[in-house]
Length: 513
Image (cartoon, rainbow, N blue to C red; front, side):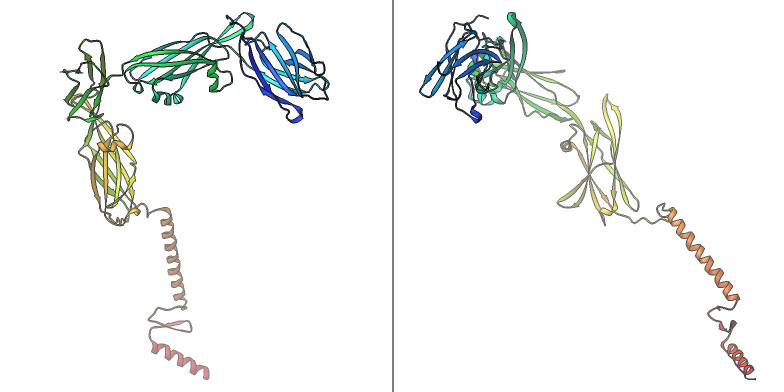
């Protein structure tokens, strides 16, 4: 690397004592190959007469506060001189060699007292290598301006800054992503640098037509802050931009089969050029020598693509854009039926034709201003071809608990093509309103009644009835109980009241005798 002529860079550190008598300072970065001075200044400490200077634990010099003399170990690289101004001591360290990869010119510089070896001043020195030259290229795409810049022998790894003559772009630049790549370079004497490449994409529509100037700065990432840009190397790009194009207006993205569609193509931001616009299709050509061209066609095919092509009369400028609508078929002949049991209503809705695969939406109309959304429980699709076009027969099934309602209600069913996978596709659907009259279902064969618990209950009741009948028969035979029309007297049954009274009198007379 060709070093520049030595330039004196004075770095002043006005140090004051902190806790424990120590004071630290941050030095300014130093460019590689330049001579510099480190200047330390502090109050005289009468309890210490001498101190020494270290750089990355390398002993550099030793100084005496009384004699103001410094002994330098490496006088060809580092020269320390000590001065006194009243109660202040000033130490100047002249560094004649600065090397990005030399541990003993960058890094931490420390001052320690001889008697305690305690650090009382320190400074971190960062040495950087400035970019020698910045090279940039630009590439225009349909919507973006791609700027790529690179430089050699940068240390540490570099960053890029951009500035344009368009205020709107400058406000947007901090939000744009800048991508980087680095290549490590090793040179003799264990020197290491980096080849830095950066690139950025800027929207073309922010520029407008004409000549634009873009300033690029590549700088070493010394401190990690944007202020490092002052250590950078700059270059200016001049870019002649033509942001003219042809655009589509009133062109539906989704169209129905067997309908008529119009699409307008026109020029935008094209100056001082006469442009003729032409629509191209598989079986279509419409030549219009104007700044606007209208495409008009019947939708009979799917996946059809149309190109609007614009060309200047001299052929020096060409523009184009593509119109490729999505073709759909609304579900045809939507109808619904329902089947009820004691607990629920099963609704099945069908359509005879649709494309792409239809979906169903069920909404229960509770009143005039509210609806409850439900999902289908199952769906079935059967595909078939008609005139080499694919269609689908579809059926959706939905189950509604009867507990939701107490009377007749209405179900709004929408069958729609599944275009984007979102509910917004429902605008292309077909609606059907189905009336449901709740019925009370009674059936002795209802499986919900004839369950094991019911059989157990019936069996228990039957067993108890049999036991009671047997008990009644036994008791009647023993005369303990009688029928309702028979009177009982001392364990015997009599068919009439007179008979029981006579028997009673006879027994009474016999007992008297």
